[in-house]
Image (cartoon, rainbow, N blue to C red; front, side):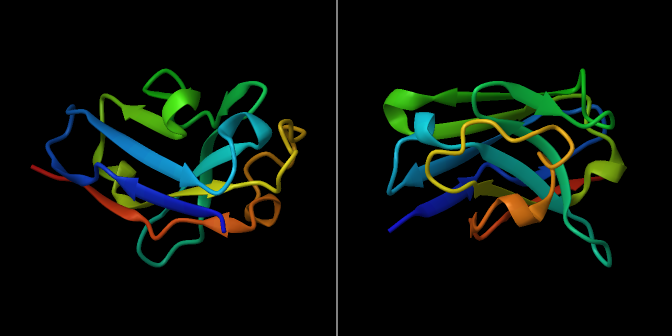
Length: 127
């Protein structure tokens, strides 16, 4: 059974950094695409980054966030730098179906492409 468990969230001051982790069990990372999403209060889920055969980012986090993965430990990371209050949200990692290592960019940040989700981790950026 596929499971995803996020960790690493917390309270950070503007300009600070956090590293989120997503441990995947149930199938190998190199057989899927993992996406990071976030949901701010009262808003829809927003896809922000994904990694499969390649890594992609939305403009709002490009140059501040870096996605990476450690296949040996089945873990995907999201390094978040230069955090701003607008980054405050619950952050989720999600997995695409087995064998989906590349999603066209037009759909790469759609929740419809990711049937498996973790429980989320809260990130709060505030002084």
